[in-house]
Length: 431
Image (cartoon, rainbow, N blue to C red):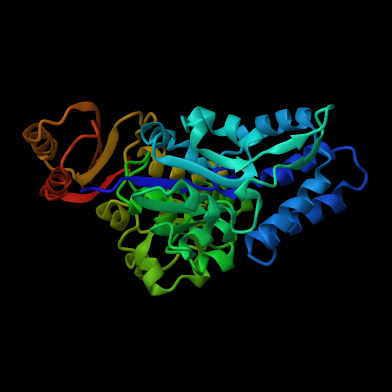
């Protein structure tokens, strides 16, 4: 008999990018001259609890004392938090709708702000377990319900014991209280969530470190918005690059590694390279990058061995006058290629700008420009009765570049057969 899966998800710094109480105090003490000192105290109490250095109940009590907030401040907080939902949770909203009966928000935060924030994700109100504030007649927060197990030390463990859920329970969170569920044996696996913050005291004890919700879905073979988590794509950055460019890649979720720190094994696994003018690596070093898919070079393409890259199916974006906005533009072209397959203004591929992927899987097939390849691709698709939503083909003298958007219901054998077509250079699934 197949056991039901439950997904126990933390809220602060997991479902959202921030700690809600920290944000609430910034709102409530906006005009207080002592606000910076109070902010620091609250952050310290938060971190001590998350790292297991202070009991959760002590931390919560001290933070609430410092809030100075009311119901109007809470309304402003909710508006703010809706904009701060973690990016990988937002792009996987369909997962929560599909698994509405299986997802539980279990948090030491407060229902007053959690419930309205997660509502649009179809998470049921009865599946939200959190603390509740106490208010005076004027609507000012004066405390919280200390009978709620989640207000106490080990509260998540106490709550889960009370719920007595039967099945496979997976915990996702960034703090020590989340790990305690695994330590108690109440959940099958604990995933330390590091998209927003990484705590060594937590990651050291986790069954798996997940830098995004995409990663969680991927390793558990659950359907997600993307087919391969970006945190698994290594991006090598070489030379003195603008901070804006590197930050854009970080925001996309790539694993950024400086070229000076990349060993041979890392180079072999690199999928993306962003290279400052004059800092391109030797032909030999670039050849080691067996998984390389795209290069952004802040210089002239003539500096690079373009025929070699083209033959390997590696897309190159360059600009000999790359300064300011142009440097950012090259970085954005890399991101568009990874996200959509666009090869607009490439130095070695035909130009093709593509729309975003919507409710389909997008396949990229790069092959030698010889007759009959497209016909073979379509024969394989017809054999598997695949419905094609859109298909694009661009060629130059050397290669053919095919993009195919198909429905999501297909057997893995289809992908193997497309990859095995003669004259295939590179093949990958975007979504």
